[in-house]
Length: 247
Length: 247
DNA sequence: TAACAAGCATACTAACGAGTATAAAACGAT
DNA sequence: ATCGTTTTATACTCGTTAGTATGCTTGTTA
Image (tube, rainbow over all chains, first blue to last red; front, top):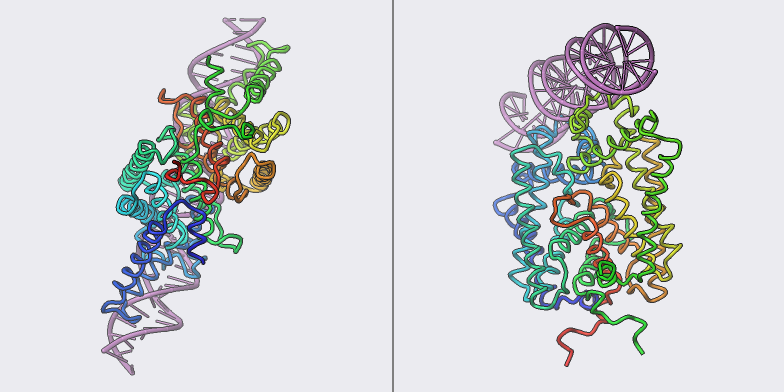
């Protein structure tokens, strides 16, 4: 029944939905398995990684809410109930935290693109798979990832690396939309602007989403997927029959 | 002919389009007229206001591109080819610049809502009028306005004032979408998420738009209006006939 | 129990940028 | 040329925060 609800709210086939859900599930399990192999809770390295992940998660939330520059290392430490000295045991500096957060977001973006091409058949389907996988990534691990605007807070050469990866993801997304326009599953539009339009909506999610019970992450992801689909499958108004011309 | 091009890319009636365009034109002319009345270029106050506007415009661009915190008063002064001491002759401090920029954006938002209710007949039409007027505002005067994320850089009590105005604008936008859902011009969806989705796309524009000849502001505004319309008029997928079921 | 790791308290340096003080230069109006 | 306004040059204070030094406390492991 729950599966049926997914199918009802999106054009993605059951197979495509399953592929997306399985991808992140497998990835998560693979990561857990890698940690479990020859590792116990007494494994110093494993504990260290868990603590690093906790810092990244809390820092990501704080950076998204108030901005990187408006968040001090003391703020992050307080949220974790440790001192800022402890933070420097796990991260070289504040910039490294921001950089790794961006890298995680880029990893999700690239993984989403790969999965879209691996399992999607039409342009629209690829786009929706990509968005769903990306949303699952930014909702899942680390709670949230930083948004574009904080690229400005990164310093070179790391900043250039993130900008380069982001540009590639954006360009690949434009291509997917162009492919959809060509195969007829996406309505005619400026692919670049449509990409900016939809990526804006995607990247804005970490800024406002709160896990406050109002909507679960999955519900938000499903609704946004629905809105993405409407945006892309809608016809240009001069092609679409007027509502009041029906009779 | 140019007028016809507008009509072709959006469901807005000619009357509605004209109302939006006339609104900002009248506002601009009214402001110019106010400046001209009993004012000459030798009018000290007029010159002072022009200089203030120039600071706001350049500061807005710099804040959008690199972020408020990553932009120093020296940076803003350099861009204007003056010294930072001169900036302090026109603004009390850096926060005042940011605050006034946010206020301008809120003014455009509220004006857009007023116009939407004054000239729109359906929910969809009101929404599109609102978006068009808002985009004209943030494109026109001052080039750009700061985005939501820099609210985090504002300090209280100004920050609370901006947040309050922004919340009202957001709530009013949700109501317009709900009205459209009720009158059938907007497809069934979560109005709050649809508002976040579309406002994200709107507020992201100053971050990426460059007047580099690729697309004019009006072209971007028109394309986005088209995308907004598709988003809102699209049917839920379980209601829309499948493309391959046509025969 | 000893050794080591992890975290902490306290204090500190250094850098940066907002903002100001003072005096001089430049500019514009008469 | 003079006077007033505007801008600038130079130097400075102050606050904030990143990041570090040192030594102590606590917890974990062998």
